[in-house]
Length: 210
Image 1 (tube, helix red, strand yellow):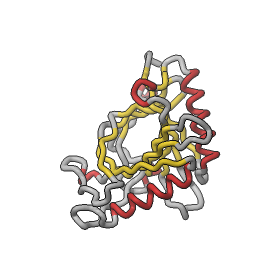
Image 2 (cartoon, one colour):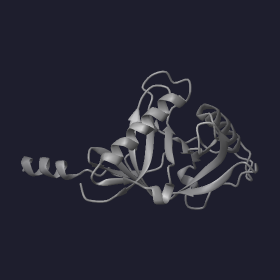
Image 3 (cartoon, rainbow, N blue to C red):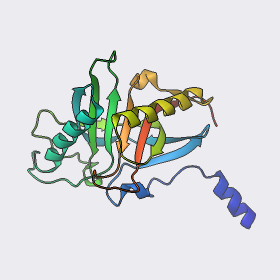
Image 4 (tube, rainbow, N blue to C red):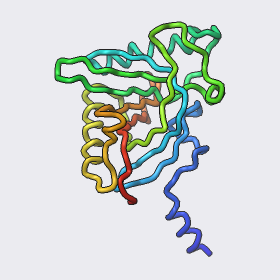
């Protein structure tokens, strides 16, 4: 009997969608299922509403600050209900690299809208710089790292994950769907000093069973 239980546990490699990860810290996070393919975590996110804003810049740090402030104003009352909206995690940053080293990249900063708005839709922003969009369904390779994020660190982590995906026999980067875009997900407030959690997401296509 014990052997059967252990075998069943070994075969289960998909997370339950209703099991909240520790790094959500008790606030609403998008649910996902995950598996391991070629030693890489691959998650599947269903379609969900996010509040987003675009920032054009050569600086990751500048874009995050500007985008976060716009979205924080939205959840603080700059919406057609004039009400506050609960903070969620992660703060998601989609990075679309510029054409050259001195060209602006496009950063799309997004807040996941709370579960209570996922069926009816969230309040509309009153700022023309903020918009509601549906992100997903989305399949992403994921790598996690601790500490504080910076442009140098985030780019290095993203490059390392893209190299792993490119070398994986059963995965390929989803260039048809996302071009060379990738995501950074941050889960912690800026003044949290320890046990920080950050993620890189690279959109992928599964080409064969692991």
